[in-house]
Length: 209
Image 1 (tube, rainbow, N blue to C red):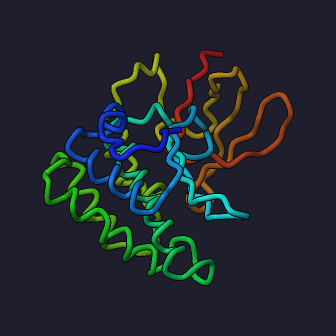
Image 2: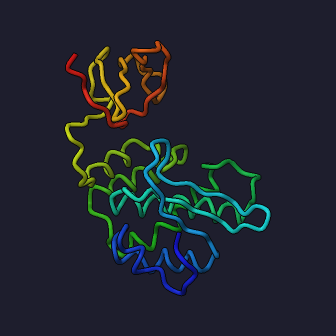
Image 3: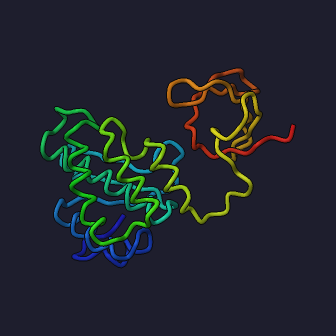
């Protein structure tokens, strides 16, 4: 968590494009938001918590995202904060109100030419689809993943596996890929026969068994 201070730009520039850091720093100060860089979480890239019993707005973002993912996730969560300020809990989490706030908040970064061309195309496509959130829009998610620099050690993604392929997670749990159900893939855990739904871009390891 960042300590109370007037400028968070230096700390933020470790995680996002340097030119973007002063803007996010200003947002933190303007909203008195508790902004935390957290450990990696498999189920989410970031989250927003509204003020509760005297606590301030809180935004968390995973520490291991690439700079563009970290920035877009931060904008995504600040759009939630702005939507809460405007409407409290009376609107849908990713409804038209949130979408409008996201479009407004991302504009300064587009004007700064921070994003490479492939991301600008994906962002533009995403902005024309008000039903999707920025973290679940596959085109944008794929474009962001291309800018990951971490060594995946042979990892692939679920959507690229053939039907009935066996794969493992980092923790050793083994699954069989089944059919797609709406936007996710149904997968059966080998040891328990339990069914889980996997995001198409979830990173997994093809089993050699």
